[in-house]
Image (cartoon, rainbow, N blue to C red; front, side, top):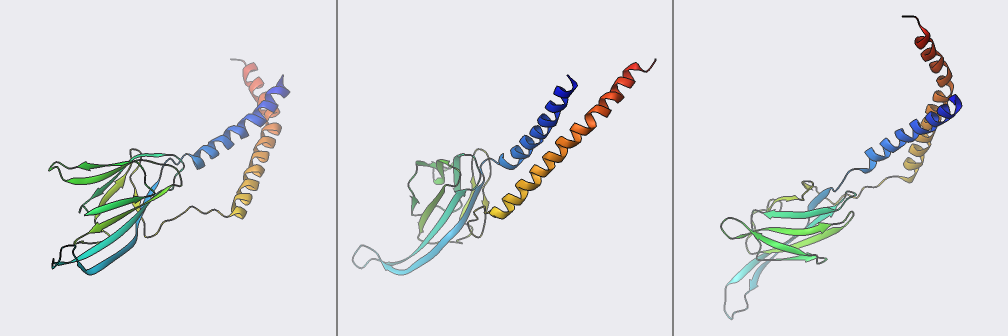
Length: 197
């Protein structure tokens, strides 16, 4: 009976520790990153009307990526300045939400899967600042963070192997320690139970 409990403890406890470590490493949820990927302008564009005024057009493209490991739902992209036109590539289901004054303010994307990236290109007549026309990017679960470039998580295969070996050695050590310490611990418990009161 004691050997069965000893074997179970030497297997179950390292398994629970490994499960907890795995949960801590993989329970990030969605993680939204966005950045301005391109900004350009066209000066002195002739309007479609003959003899119409010349215009300056500003084109800005932002990239939004879910770098987490869960689906991000209802992503809102709020704007300080609304564009003349925008386009989402690849096209995904979205809607435009108006503010209190019935002016368009927010683009809402239905969802972004883990590792999925969308680009939104904007056309402005007059642009105040290419880095400040977005008020915020957020989903139901998390607020997005702006970066200077789109960062993909890159883990070295060698690092994964080293961590795997270290975790395996730690689990073997914990299992062996439980295996060797179980009998003396049980003897101590038996002595405490026999101790006269």
